[in-house]
Length: 200
Image (cartoon, rainbow, N blue to C red; front, side, top):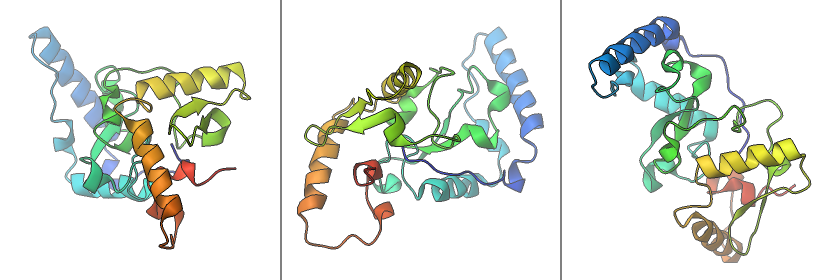
């Protein structure tokens, strides 16, 4: 997770409160009829492609959580609700709740904790909470962090599966490949897993 700063809410999301209430009402009706939760939440947003584009600008087309890149080429580009819409339907269209994500990180699904780390939060920094084992590619907990920060890091690592699905090996292989290539890297944003190359 690389830190990024989120700008003001785009104008096309100005109706987020109305849409959120409508979605919450529809969800309640679906539950009462014992049907699945309405999935087409994004139909309200006429500028859906623009939303994905704006979210991609925030992370320079990296996944907000695992930092894989380029996102479209590696994994299908999705929009993750930090606070799941199944639990917080009124927050479905809230700008600060929407993140560009890869399909693997989106497997977090309906899980949530108030301690979950958010990459656009004030004070967030990867190395405050985590360290990298460059040999194995595993994201480890920073044992120098406070107990509370360590707990938050553990929760985040589990919920986003940061060490699951062969991700450590992919990171380790990628790090070795970049270190041994002769081609010059123009910018850190051209790399996947930027936190591995942005060591403090």
